[in-house]
Amino acid sequence: MIDETDKRLLAALQANAHLTAQQLGEMLNLSPSQAGRRRQRLEQAGYIRGYAAKLDPGRMGLDVQAFIQVQLGSHGPEQAQGFARLVATRPEIVSAWTLTGDADYMLRIYCTDLAALNRLIHEVLSPHPAVARVQSQIVMDQFKQDAPLPT
Image 1 (cartoon, rainbow, N blue to C red):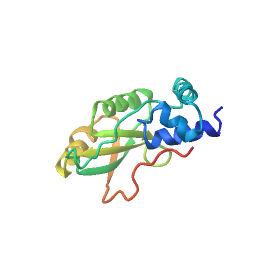
Image 2 (image 1 turned 60 degrees about the vertical axis):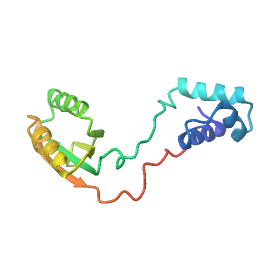
Image 3 (image 1 turned 60 degrees about the horizontal axis):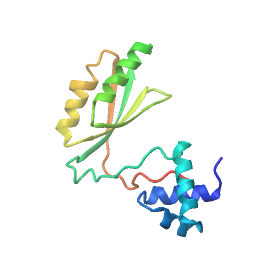
Image 4 (image 1 turned 180 degrees about the vertical axis):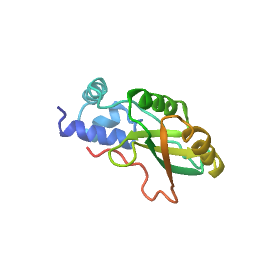
């Protein structure tokens, strides 16, 4: 279990993963060593899965963001595993979820342009033998950026 101090520490690290034990201690009213031990405990317990830089897609030349819903034709383990292997090989697919409802999967995509998105859909996803239907939604504007998890 985590306490309120742990939750405050996690919220602070989500806002700035570069905080030192000294800075965390000041924010949490702890000594630097106590703050460092708490961070290490939360890392070891799996609350903190890692640290990463958030890149700007536009500056990286990734001007098209889309969500793609995929429906499989059959739902055997081989089909699902084969599709999951395909998804894992594609860097344009930055996240993927299995769903309930009409679609089996939701994919979040970043591409350089519409032509790249078109190629991904028509040359990679749709031809996969397990795929029955692909439906895409192009993001016009992301008015709320990916936010930290609530603590």
